[in-house]
Amino acid sequence: MRRFLLWPFGILYGSIASLIRKYAEIKGRKIPSAFTVVVGNLAIGGTGKTPLIIQLTEEFLRKGLSVAVLSRGYGRKTKGFYALHDNSLAAEVGEEPLEIYKQTKVPVYVCEDRLEGIKKMAAKVDILLLDDGFQHLPLKAHFTIVLDNAKMPFYKNAVLPAGSLREFPSVLKEANAIVFTKTQPSFNYTEGFTKAHQYTKHVFTSSYQTTHTGLDLSKNYVLISALANNKALDQALKTFHVIKHFAYLDHYSFTPKDHKAWSKLAIENNAEIITTGKDQSKINKEWLDERLSINVVRSKHHFEKDGFAALIQLILTGKQNAQL
Image 1 (cartoon, helix red, strand yellow):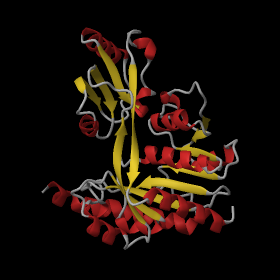
Image 2 (cartoon, one colour; image 1 turned 45 degrees about the horizontal axis):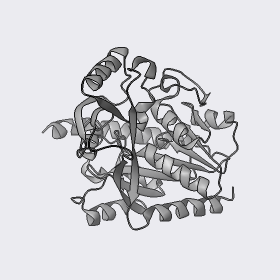
Image 3 (cartoon, rainbow, N blue to C red; image 1 turned 60 degrees about the vertical axis):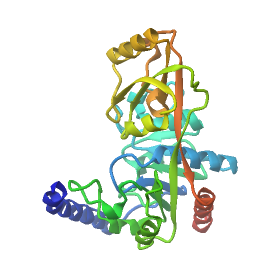
């Protein structure tokens, strides 16, 4: 009923978004000099962009290619261009860029204006990955990957505010590849591929895996996360003895009071801390009891049927065709 009532507003929202995109095309979208790969999505909410950017970066590095990452830096308290370094804080650069930098050690930059950010980048690289740049219309990337959460695929969704889509699905024709993420056995692959193939030839699927190397089934843990879907983390760690999950809204900034509550509960129960790679960047060890250990779990895409290798090859073919 709610979606039905909001449907007219979704049509209005989508129509305005379409006009804005058409205006950008008329005005002229600029193609960067560096080979640019956008990893974006059509819907708001978590689709796994950051883990995929990390995986792409690591694979390109293994192939001997130089890589940099440019992001808007969502949630940061600064403005303008910023190059990440070892002492960068999440408040300065955003959680996701900091996680990418710490895991990959490649040059990572943040700038609201991606074209301006590209001009100011110190690194000249073989591949530039743009985090969440599908709706950044002044720029036209050489290769675009759109991630779509298989739990609510675009063809069952609706445009804001009736659903969570930022634009009408017709914009997917600009994607070089669509990846249905977080797939589960209930996902209808035939329907999904049929719908996605209306817009692009290359469609992939991936499930989400949480790695928890080093966790001990005999220990107590206090879990801390601020994610779009905290419940998924509960499910991933259900085999471990988590005495309490401190779950916060996505991009929540942890306070000294929060740290004190975690420390008190963990010390009283002889427990260790578990958190995510993204949330680790916001934890201030000076506010935690020094006796506490912090364990970090990370999420990773598991592509089906050698899909990741095929995606990598598709990108490299695009780079070769672009002659950059």
